[in-house]
Image (tube, rainbow, N blue to C red):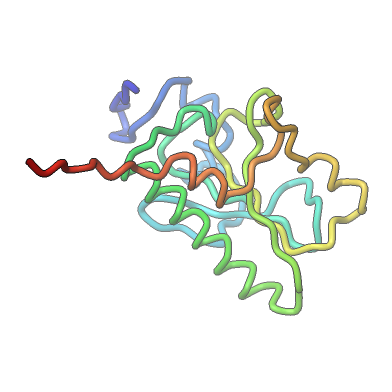
Amino acid sequence: MIRKLTEGGRMTRGTALSECIFCQIATSSTSTTLLHSDDKVVAFRDINPSAFRHYLVIPKQHIPTVKNLERSPEDFSLVSHMLDVGKSLLHRDAPQSKHYRFGFHQPPFNSVDHLHLHCFALPYTPSWRCIKYLSLGPLGGFIEAEKLLERIKPQIPHHSSM
């Protein structure tokens, strides 16, 4: 995967950053209220929530989709951090919820070409919204964050003894 350094010093994996709404949010170029911000990610409320609480956690680095993630320590660490931030926010803001859900849309079902973790404190509102977050097996659909982490977990090289 080729990673390019942009004029602003941010890393990207394709797409013009100035056109990406999530890149604009990540650089505080919009009026979006951030729930969390650190050196790797930002989090904010989904503009069209599908659950009691519905947050998005995005990397500051422009990564188009889950298909652009590699089986690497860097990508595994990033997605793990995104999940930790999402869990922390929902446990803080919706401690009474009994069910939480975390995952990503896979192409062609993603609405914005910038990696984003959906973080839900259920129930879905309205309940039919759960349809948007179904796994469609080999066709893609929604992938649970834990399943994506299994997919991109770096392989430990086997050392053979002689």
